[in-house]
Image (cartoon, rainbow, N blue to C red; front, side):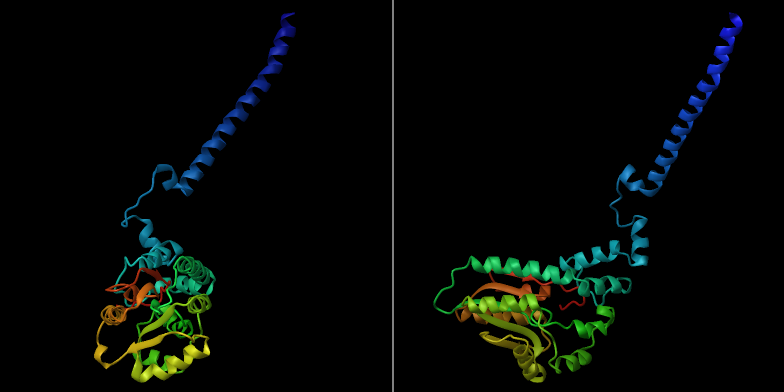
Length: 282
């Protein structure tokens, strides 16, 4: 009897040992998986470091990854980065991808929808003094082809080179803004095109370029004349808008790709910023 019981106990011990080993191995695998997760997502486990001096910032900047360049572009559009001369070299591909990869067009369409919704809520008077002010370069017509040759803004601004490009009159319309422009005209608003382009050297080319791209029916095309040479865009455009208001125009909206289009005095009842991460105009 004792021999039979001993035999049965011996037969159970291997089973118990095997179950213990399997349980220990499973526990070890769980520990290894946890270590892998901690290695991949350390900040998710231990909290985020929001300091710009954190170890990730220099790496992202050096690599030119979307982490740094997306933050830079957002800061530019929010006017938190000012007076910058060129796009950071590591962000060339990011800006290129944004401008030609579809996101720029989607952003424009959303902004155009917002402008249209706002304009629809305005009761246009029959006195002909309800106005909108639109910038021209990279608001109505695009200089993207030119800036492609300038590495999407990584090269410094070249005044002579830009004039040589603009005088050709080949800037294509920005579709979302062209559609918006046509809507404003059809709705009875007086659209005033206000640009820092030099009237003496670029007046005819600009007029023909706009006409060929479908911009006609506007109230005025106002360009920079000799009295305004050397003035900042904010100073120049503020004075022009002041004159318009003194003439009796009610500026319901102001659209531009530069903050200098939208700042200063007499900016209008509402401003709309068109994205442009390629250059900065003071």
